[in-house]
Length: 152
Picture 1 (tube, rainbow, N blue to C red):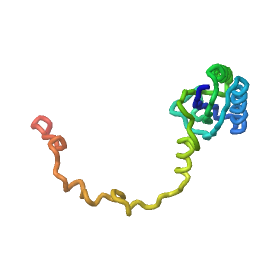
Picture 2 (picture 1 turned 120 degrees about the vertical axis):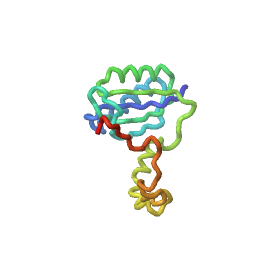
Picture 3 (picture 1 turned 60 degrees about the horizontal axis):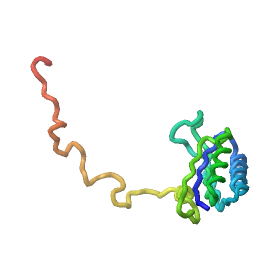
Picture 4 (picture 1 turned 120 degrees about the horizontal axis):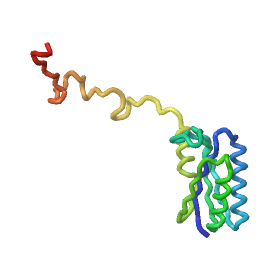
């Protein structure tokens, strides 16, 4: 059987519980057609890059799938019918990723909190090494335009 990574975007106005039920429905379709879903990750509500069907945000979910292509095609057909699904993407991979996906690792890094002042790091804080702008010599293209007698 082939290995797939599948990302699903559901409308923002459905609850997280409804998205979980939706994902379980699609997992049941895969399992009914001889496949398995070893990992499901809910990434939460995230902003979209552009509006999709008048939605600015969506619930994101990742499914790792080990199934024949017919099972994936049937799941995608059901997703096209469902009006709560905004978009989906299925990619065939050589091997499934173990552990957390990059999105959940990113969320863990973001939860670390404030990093504090950055004045103790190189390159942080004010740039005293450059000096004030007025002390730097002007380049030719920054020179003030000369006035002609007609303009004065």
